[in-house]
Structure formats: structure tokens, C-alpha cells
Length: 425
Image 1 (spheres, rainbow, N blue to C red):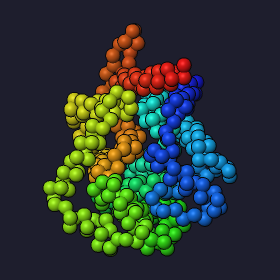
Image 2: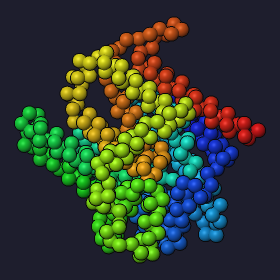
Image 3: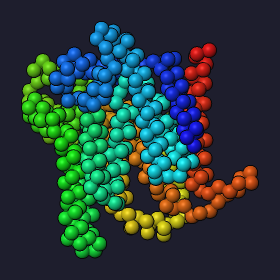
Image 4: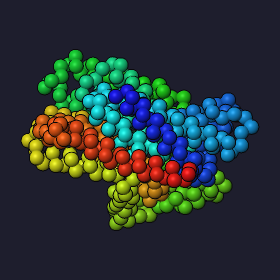
């Protein structure tokens, strides 16, 4: 198994670096230039730069460690892209260790191949925070989920700390914390007198405060600066302004007008302004269009879409065939399932809304790891222990599902291998 993981990561590294070599993303595409500029200013000011509260500081900080004075933009871009790919290899290795803790080795390897070749290989060669954010956001999700099933003091600290690290990578993770808090408090109230004694309730209050305290301690310096510069904690231009625009050109026009101080206060994008200027029909149309785009944008053979479709189909089939078991499991794990459902639904709606401004699959891909993890737990719980004999060997449902994931990953492996080798030769 260790050899299989090493070979898979080596193949991933070859394809990821190969994609960059044959078709490197130019500096002016995506927001690579902004990340490199932020990292350079960090290095040159000895990390005294405050940032514009658009891109969060953790990823630029890591980029600043590979920057050297005198580098041209092209040299820094090349080194940053290589760094991001190499970091993604390390993150994938850590993901396998996480998968292995919850699943059998072969299934964990299938999930690793799914993540590496269905998601990471397409994002790692671009100087963006996405691979790091996907990993940290998944860890935060996992720790918070475990706090609903088996809360412990050390787990509370890790949950708060990793949520903070994910937030300092991309601010969009912030919505996950209040969702978890509502579910955790609701679980405590519901179970009080049923399973929880007064001592259990006090312990859970301590766990709750530990999660929030660890998060607050980690983000405090950054948020104190936000309060000083922008007048509010957790300020971010995307949630404060851009998501209340109708398009990216409108967001850019607002940015230019704000910089030139040529903007009346009542013209600043905000929820109140958007509500004044749009009808319920326009709001619903924007949401429906965003949902349609999210569901159809990547409906193609290469990439993540086929894996999601396989999970949805398999879970739907088993939930219907074993409806009584599905109902019982949903009742037994109602709050953990509720957290997963609310987390996925809330972010799908948020990304559908934001799609009118920025259209990019990198947002919805942040849900991929939480989705396949939660989906895997459901599939394994619904497994009826039936098996199928293939070439004289018996395979259970979970093993067959892992084989199906691996077969789909071969599509991306072959697609990228052909692309890289064809151009190189």
C-alpha cells in the first residue's frame, strides 16, 4: 500500500508539473499577479503589510518564503507554480493518512486517486490558494464534525485552530463556524435530560468555548488590524461589496470609483442597496441561473463531475433499497447529518449567488472533499454485505465502489498523460 501511494503521488507530480510545463498559466490569468504582489510586499516590508482584505494572508506568506530579492515577475511566477504543485503533493500524502484513519486501505487509495486526478491536478499549477484551502477546509470540517459525534478537549482546540487556518487562507470558510455552532447548541439542548446530564452540558459548554477561543486567538491579530483599518472585524471586500454586484465589470467599476473617492455613500454595494434595486423575480432568477451553472459547468469526462455523479447515484440507490436502514441511521446521527446537509446546502446557495460575479469551478470544488467523505460514510453504513464474484474473487459493494472510483480516475490519468507526453514529444 505504501508503494502504491508513492507511485500514485509520483505519477501525480509528473502530470501536474507536466501540465505546467506544456501550458503554464500566464501571469495575467486568474489572480496570480495579485498573490505574487502580496507575497513580494510581505517579504520587502518584513511582513508589516496589512493587505487589502480581498486575499487572505496565509498563502501569500508561504509564497514569500520562496521569493528572493531581484527576481523578475516571470521567475517568481515559475517558482511559485512549482512550489504550489510540490505543496499539493505533500497535502495529498497527508490526505491519504486522514482517509486511512476512517476507511480501509484500498478505499482510502481510491479516494486519494479521485482527489489527486479529479481535482488537484487541475488547480495545483495555478498560483492560487485553492489546494491549500481545500486541505485546511476539509480538516476543519472533519474536526467540527467529530465534535458532534465524540467531542474531546484536544479535538476542540484542533477544530478551532484549523478553522482559523482555513479562514486565513480564504475567508469563505467563515460561514461554516456559525452553522456548526447552531447545530452543536441545538444538539446540547435536545439531548439535555435524554442523554446529557448537567455535568455533560457543562462539559459541552467548555468544548464550545474552546473551539471558539482557539479560533479567536488565531485570527485576533488579523482582525484587530481589520477593525483599525476598515472599522469592522471580519471585513472582506468580497462579502462586503462584490457579492452584492450583478457582474464582475460592475465590481471592477465600484473598485475604481472607490479608489478615486468618486462614489456617493448610497452607491456602495450592500444587501440593502441590492434589495432596493432588484425585484424578487430578479433575485430568484439570479439564484436559479447560478444553480444551473454550478450543476452543469463541469459536466464533462475529465475532472470532478463524474465522481460526484457516481456518489449521488450510489447513495440514492442504496437509500431507496435500504430505506429503513437509511431512516434509522439518519435518526441516530441526526445532528452530524444535519451539519453536513446544512454545510453543503449553504455553500451551494452562496456559490450560486456569487456565480453572477465570478464564474469559476474553484469555489464549488471546496465542497468536494467534505462531500466525498460524508458520502463514503453513508455508503459504508448502508452496505448490505452483498458480494459479487469477478474472476474467481469475491468483491463487496464498497470494494466495487472503490474500483469504480479508481476506474474513473484512470480517465483523468490517461487524459493528462496523453496531453503531457504528446506536447513533450
